[in-house]
Image (cartoon, rainbow, N blue to C red; front, side, top):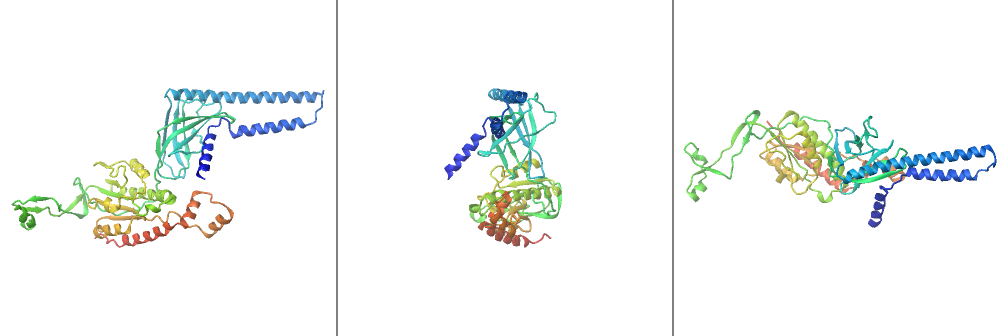
Length: 453
């Protein structure tokens, strides 16, 4: 079965480089049928009508050949021009994304130098993410673009649903004539990357307290407790309180040592937002968890970040991802960088929140329905008064499939889009029941957090 799929995929890829299009095949078939039909018609020899009819057929034939020749020649010239520049290393290709509020991701492209076929088209096909082929696309170009302009520049609304980074390994450039009969392709290697950012959504007010101080600039309403270091001691000095002497150390080393005492600090300068992508169910993950659930979580995380950022300007982002797990070095990073980091994030099952969250720094911790209950329970029991925990419920991401939809899918039609396929698979998934039960338990635990007084 896999062998058949591989052969089918190979034949499809070879079809991408076919020099003629389906329109040309239809044209040949139609021309042949017309010729057969005309040949079968009764003839009136030695009449003016017969001579005029033959003359019209010849004119039609010559004009068709001229148009086809001109179309093919313009395509060949453009292809050779691009091929020579590619050989010389002069071709430049760039791609980037633009903000969007629809399911279609606008992408901007620039490709130069390139020569358009006379009145023809330049189309592109991307090879990305380990051999995935996109559809053949045509850019929406500037209205002033013409045949003499040696730069292809425009945008295209690409329907890509996943919030992630896409790596384009190559671009297939098609040169097509104005009749779209001929299509000569050439492969252009590329190392371009672009990512689809999370979408802006509704924002709510999130209450959180500062817990870190680098500069004594922001006075907070409720003083935070700064714990002393329990592992490093300092020598006893005359002004120190003798009640803090550690007599066990004195009995062993005959040195007077004291612990650093706790203090109440009324100042704070910044907040740490910890975002966890940990999943306790990595073995049961599938297409649904890795696409719609992950996309939903990324959008929610971005909106949470924006909500907190409005009230606390100096917000620090900390993630459990292997790339740039802690993304600041004492300086705040830009929102565009946060979007990129969110797009790069994936579920991981190695670093749970007990090993991820620094309880001395964390002000807000964001978790999903896939987080283990015991870990959250332990953190909340110890730090529920100091850290704000936010649960993103994933069960609301995919709606339930109604009975009418089930009947329509079973008896009448196949699933038309990804969402319908996700709904039917998710409804029968054993992971869904585990996730819902885990989510309900996490909701109860977080609701029992004592309110700050």
